Image 1 (spheres, rainbow over the protein chains, first blue to last red):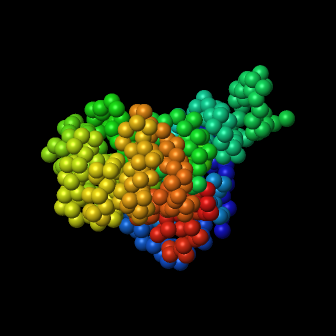
Image 2 (cartoon, one colour):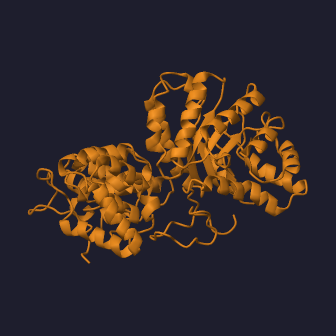
Length: 226
Length: 291
């Protein structure tokens, strides 16, 4: 099975750069690995059903009906072999979205996010690196980062945000993780993108917490390694 | 005492209520979509409300160890406002969501033709989506409104076992029992029902198809009156199993008909036909053990 990288794919030269055209953030191997992880996790009947439904999902009306039901149909538990935090339903929703025609994928992702409950929104956010949407879905990441639901914040700070979010918004996203107690290991590209300003913001948070007699999040060490 | 409050408007309640409810034994709730006190003026504000019932509110509940579900509908009062009626076109996309366990609250408020239209259309949606229906019985002319509700329910063809007639009292309970519907009672500090009156009804009618809720909202109400009713039942000679049936197994059975209850500790597994885990009911995932 292909292994997953928790780091964003970056163009040679390193550092975040705008996506070319409607490119994906994840490599094709990472997307293939999701399907392999699902096939390993689902029993034969469900795996067969998934194949059928993926074919049907090329029809946007069917996609809209299948997307909300992914959790109760295929499961909500953690998906072995997938990156940290991924659930069975997340991978199913990624594959469902991959069935949309490339030119209509961004529009489909925005619609399903806007009409989605929290689990569906998390599914769209998880799917973004695997979709040929360039930076056209960035507004969804910004929306999720305004939420106070840690499930959404965690899904928003993955490889897609690492690739596309500007540095100011990205720093704010990292700080938000500390506030809503999303572990910083969920932040893709942290080691590559952290900078002196993020370290200063983290120091400020630590000073406020100490002044208030409150605990300083242990994850701060990941921003400013000793 | 494990408690499932089958009708409570948590959007209007504080986190202190969640904490107190959990301490009192409440581990599952259903929040029906209803009127917010201030009339809405467009379908968009319903969409934001429904999104909250499916997003923020379940998260808030989960922080206190409470599993939150909802019912979705255009409520009877706002069914009279032509600006709100297009909400009916939004409902199908909400009725396919996880944790939507019924269509409701529907029914009559002022017994208008507009209310009857929305009621009938939404009973049809319940049948189409294989969901139970939660029917609010009106405050004014409750007996007449209950009879009329039962007529609309019969006309729709929905199985009466998929319907709860809510906010019943001594005057209307017999009609609901005879119609084969589930019987919902809202226990309030001053109005509707109180724990001792509820116990008298349970003595007379038994515990089958009985649902007891706090219907707590933004008015004078108390989310702990489910617990108080359980204690009043014990004081009146009911045993712990009777209390468990009324306050837990009955709501699990009624809303379980949706197939979408998600009670803690039993995530669905990746199998097409899973063997029912201990404590499961009809394909729903249920809390293991007692609470």
